Length: 228
Image (cartoon, rainbow, N blue to C red; front, side, top):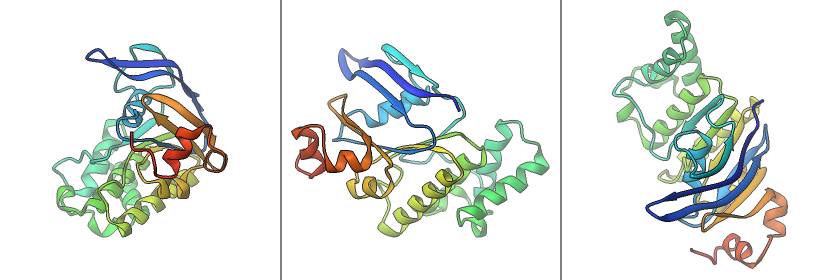
């Protein structure tokens, strides 16, 4: 499995440093959850890991390799649910006959089989997010990156997406996910990374970080008392 890490990474835009000297190794085969106040750099870090942008300093190891990414607002084609998954497979060179079999299997796995012929953009928010996850899973990534995938969902849809994340991780996929929901972080994280003002304030096994935060700033954030 390709290592996934950031080495002294800095990212600046418009004269403002948004990530500052971030060094972080992502544990292979684990569920790593990124948390932190708004503007801490969570989404930016995920985009750097996926190779969508380049750092202005330092180095990202393994960016884009064997990865799929699911965004906060799913980017779906004006096609059916089945065709959305099929298109991702076509881009990867999967033949037409095999493509449909794999696409239907992906929809079935995430409870969307009955919606295969439905236009993707008329699905509910939760269904759209599960479709994005099904599409990602169908390509058999070794790493799945998720940027606050449940931020706009109701509790039932959130539970369904969390179940989908656990299923994918159960296949041996490394999961790196950002969230604003500390309850969700407690439910899903095996490894936890706390970002604050563009720096890594704490990182390590989730149980340790929650029980023994690195400093008062991290403790305040995890207690819900730090907003920026």
